[in-house]
Image (cartoon, rainbow, N blue to C red; front, side, top):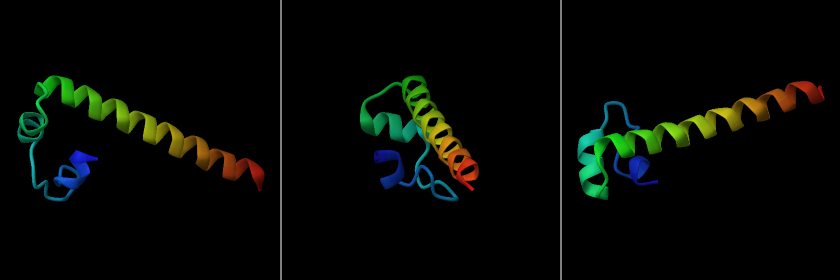
Length: 57
């Protein structure tokens, strides 16, 4: 939520991963892994839900 709120996903980004990590008290590498894992789950769920909708037709 913090990444979204602070503009990490804006185009252009309002905050870098380094700045976000410092603000949240994480190492850059730790935060990067956390964000990638969250994104992976979101994409997985999105694709599965999309496939479920296709299968129902």
